[in-house]
Amino acid sequence: MKAITLALAAFTCLTPVAAFAQRADLPPEAQVIAILDNHPTVSAAGERVGAAKAQDDMLRRGPHEVTVTGSYIRRTVDREGGYDEFDTTIGRAFRLPGKAALDRKAGALGIEVAENRAEDVRHQAALTLSALWYDWLTAAALHRNDMGTVSVLETSVQAVRRRRQLRDAADLDIDQANAALAQARGQAAGSLASREQARAMLAATFPDLPLPVEPPVLGAPELPAQPLATMRALVIERSHELRAADREAQRLGIVSQRVRADRIADPTFGVRLFSERSGMERGAGLVASIPLGGGYRRAAADQASAEANAARFDLSNVQRMVEATADADLSNARTRMDVWRGMADAADSSLAAAARTQRGQLLGAVDLSDMLYARRQAHDAQRAEIEARGEAVRAITKLQIDSHSIWVTPGDS
Image (cartoon, rainbow, N blue to C red; front, side, top):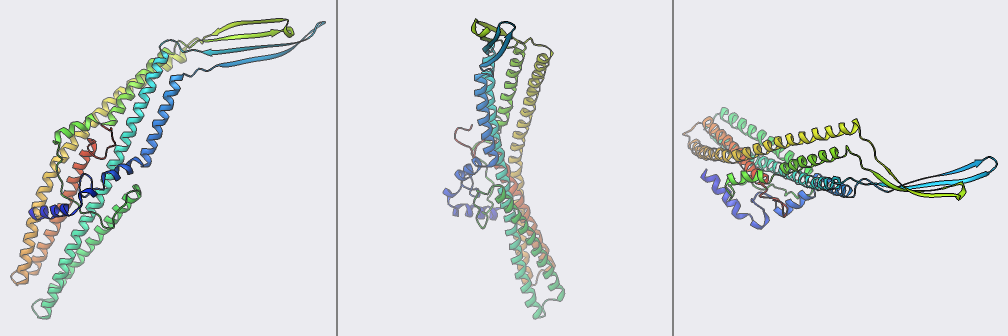
């Protein structure tokens, strides 16, 4: 583990600190924030916030508007002649006391729901970016490891061929060395394909993110400055998904009250003007009307009440899901670090054994097959260490994102 840790530390020291955000192998934080803010899903969520604000304005103003009705009649009376007659009614419905206040509460809560859902969409985009980014870095690290093994085996094949020319090695030795080299090249080709696929996925999903020709070196996992248990609590405390579910439950509760209040319909008041017999009779008066609620309004109230109850159950479910995510993040951050440390120790030991075996083979004290076997063990141990390193970094980064410790907009807490 010491050799790997020193190599990664050297890489971190050589990387300019100003060019990276929380980690040396991540893009600059300001760049990531801008990319997330411009992501299509985040932009769409922002438009939904605008829609919620428009709905809030509608609810504040109310659904009732001034209605103008009128009629014109040409009447003909025997032995009297024809008359022009008309009437006009101007009226407007008015919300009964308490309904406007409920509408205002529902509109304000609707804005909060949309804003929190928009932040949660941005949060999911950040998780996607982190996952695709470390897919690319892990695949690149595996490819570098595979190419290193190819280089070592190419040197071994050349050495075996020289020994064969000196009649110090058999044809079987050359076949074994060539087979090991071919296998290593095939594995390197596979890891290259995985690296290019990961790059293509990352570039297509986040086309605004500039990608270097060579991906950054996958750094060593580092525990954040905050205690992991504190960050686990922040996952729940700062969860926009949980806030959205809570505000939605409150909103539907208000809507249920509003629908129940609407069982008594809003009255309409107005003024009526009329002229009959070509103006010989004129008049003005007040008119009023009110719908008499029946089974439809009762069923609508029952529906709204059921939806409010369902929202409360949804809130309980979201609470459990968020707590489960927080617990899983905490567990992964702890255990993945332990896995990586063990794999790093195994990789160091395997590399040391492979180096000693190779020296012994060059001196003729170790068979070629034993050297190739030791090299294969070292190669597999290095791949396991890289994969464990990638999983540990992913786990810690996910905990940081879920706790809104990195890649957050100002005021998001």
